[in-house]
Amino acid sequence: MSEVKETKKKADLEKKAATPKREAKKPSGKTLTVMQVYSPNSREKWQRDTLKGLGLNKMNRTRVLEDTPAVRGMINRVKHLVRVKGEAV
Image (cartoon, rainbow, N blue to C red; front, side, top):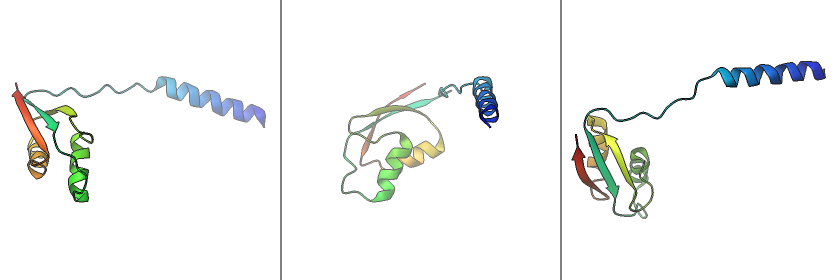
């Protein structure tokens, strides 16, 4: 029985070693720099969830996001909580 467990462990380790690690996606094209300036406390849950979706969940946190219609829409929904610092090319 111990041989079976050892064989499974070895197979799992080999499988993990063979799996390539994913690299973080780098924004291509235009980007937006978004900063959270107001707290999501006492706000509705969908507003807090939208901030989390943007990667903003603490005050003064800044993210560089790809300029897509989806991101623009999320920013528009919480425009009273965030500030778009600048548009980089």
